Length: 60
Image (cartoon, rainbow, N blue to C red; front, top):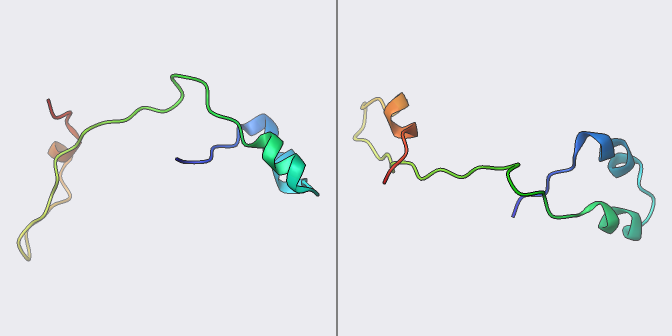
């Protein structure tokens, strides 16, 4: 699970002096902040260009 510190709390995160202060800032994100996508697995043969936009299309 990623740790995302909101902009308005970044200064407090960087200047925290105690474990309790840091733990207080470690809160779950609100719903809708992050999105997840299924993408194609790309394993190409040597020399094959795998840097293509098609791999970013949603997989059903």
